[in-house]
Image (cartoon, rainbow, N blue to C red; front, side, top):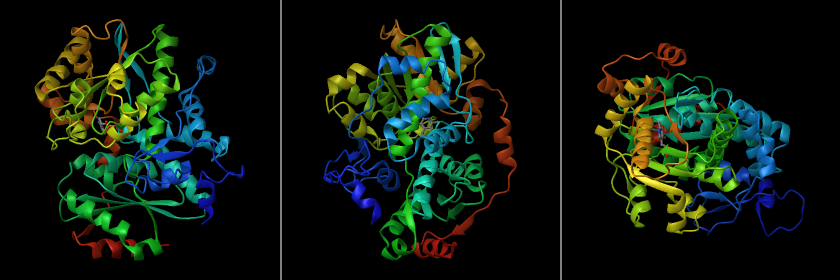
Length: 457
Ligand SMILES: *Cc1c(COP(=O)(O)O)cnc(C)c1O
């Protein structure tokens, strides 16, 4: 058990103890290194890993980042979280490969911007998290000379970012389970065309079957003997950290290119990972004026922000499907970062919920006013920002709406709002033309076990 010793905080021998350790929000398991936190995903006590302290940037350090590239900014942040566990040059390479596409800040009017997070391979912001996690996992696996199998049940978006994030990463392979006939054609293409080390299993059942099969694999001792399994799920700390890069980047771009400071970020939210990453950036010292938590009808957190009561509810289906989450997984982290103080959280974050009708109206409004096409998720964010300004909140601050997906991923909603065919970016067109590779299995654990055991070692 080589990794063990390093991970124990009570070990006082200075040798390989990393500067930053991670503990669980549930507080009943041992603090671990970044390596363990990344490979485990969820802490053994069921909590989410958080850093023992949020690293901070001095004003001087932030000033030094002026003129830096996106990947320099990302590296400066990543270094503070991964301190001592990955040599700087290698970490720099991980960050630069993770973020090898543009992150434009598009201006709509003098005080309103859209931060486009959809220029990665699957056209949604989840690419940042999945690509960083994939490279971190690959690096830690190579360090131990292991092959890590990432096992994921997906109903669409997370799985596609994971498939393309891990594509071609040495020492890793991915097995995705998705419900046959229950994902969109575009999602299915994204899940089944990465090839190489990425395998897609089409399950004759629903998403719950997929999740059940994955859970069974994780508790099957004979599986544990043969494979090193990990889950790459959305609560992994290595998915959160890279999402703070673009908040920092946006504050720098606003200041340098537009002379504007203290932006309000409007964040279209589902599991609240994206917003939590923004809070990290603010707490690290980047000059953020505040946040708007923009939800659809799934408003457990936005209601909490208003009245201090957290009552998760069953998920409701909306046009902004990736935000249809009744009980958001990252809420525990948000609470942690504000030490459970509702008032402190409410000072930084204002919540509001947007209906489907308002979403469609916003897509129309933005298109007619600016000639800009927004996807439904981004439109929720923009609508929330407009509402806040109408209510007189955050009037003085520039507003940045996080654009979480490219509109061509949601052609039906765009068509419903605008009666307009929009251009599909080339990388998406290419993807649609690729040949689908998947293996059909029954919703039976033996089918999954046979498939896994049939893979090369
Ligand atoms: C996942 C997703 C969201 C929600 O992000 P969270 O981090 O879960 O809050 C919003 N928009 C799109 C397009 C997404 O894929």
